[in-house]
Length: 356
Image (cartoon, rainbow, N blue to C red; front, top):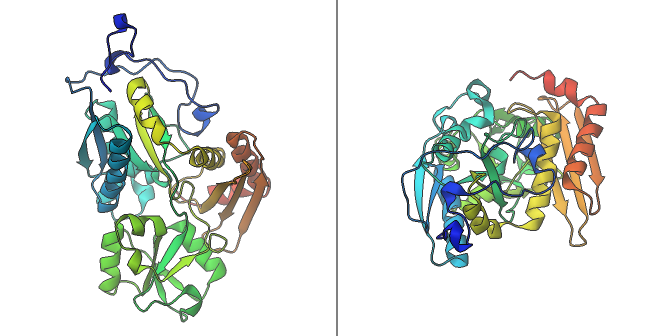
């Protein structure tokens, strides 16, 4: 990580680094939007060249995700040290409807600010929490998408029952409009009750009787060491995941080419292609935090890439779906094509009919 002086012919130090070359179409899904911008210049107090300051939400799951990144960085670059700057975001503090506090952006605003202010070098995000209807903050970029974890949802029931075994009137704790819509369509005899907070607090609320069962992400439960709580892993064909499910993204300033070079090796090619396709879909649909939009891309061993997506009304009575294959074609083109297919079915009207 230590940068040599430009006169020596080595890499520029972070403070003088240039904007990196990004993958084709990256600007359309949150890397940069609106063409190239001048490199961001911020004042930063001197820090050791081999120290990476990682900013993260302060929830147990977010910190567990950071530990994964720290471990992978240490294995790849033994000489690099990392330190963690935990922050409590607006989304973590707010227990009401996310649409009242900037939607999913409420989980990233304070993290973005730390990066832009030069207080931290790297952020670790769940892709599903990063808005795709607008670009990343000017001057920042995604440096890598890590290998994807399980994209599916899990049912958590104290007695280990599955969805098919739940009796009518069972209260399912979830505030996700995506989950509510799909449960209404497939299991109309079940009742959804609002419940928010990190996974640990939701498990505590379940134990306290605030709900009879929970729907939580499989990947999240595994990250916090609570896979034992899972009663059933639900097929993505029954409960389609959110855009970006199971994928961690590394975000930094776009002029920090030395750091980008260092962490980009943690990226996973298939996860990268899948995420580009999914985020382009969401970008074209201009979905917001209250939009019941679900979808997932899948890269096959052959190199072929597919994308399946749906748009729902909150009551689950209208379900629009599209599924296309792109072979080895550009992931962003695939995301656009699937979004257009949904728009032709009336997705714009469905999305716009939901307050946000």
